[in-house]
Image (tube, rainbow, N blue to C red; front, side, top):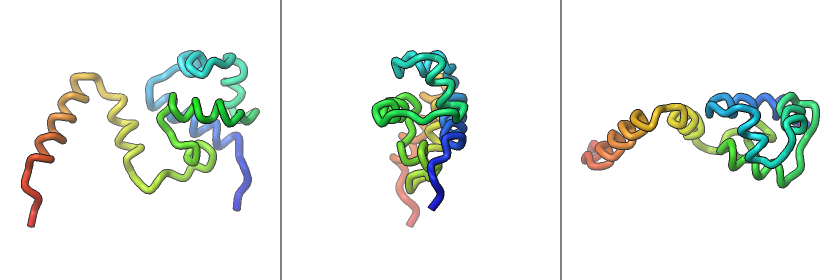
Length: 109
């Protein structure tokens, strides 16, 4: 079993932050931490407290398991969610209408 890798943790955090179109400033302000502290986490120089990890999970919409280990939950949905969140509100509305229409269709037999 591999040990904790703060560099890999920081890379996963940074990748998700960028995928969501967030700046470091918007994240560290929402976490109520300093720019220096957050930057050092994202650059893999330090770890973080459990409370900060939980807050980061909420801000970045990631599981703690994924942040710490890189293992996704038993679903491919995080990739969809990440892509969906980068769409404009008009594009998101279009996708939601398409999904509603698909739910109305009779399943193939």
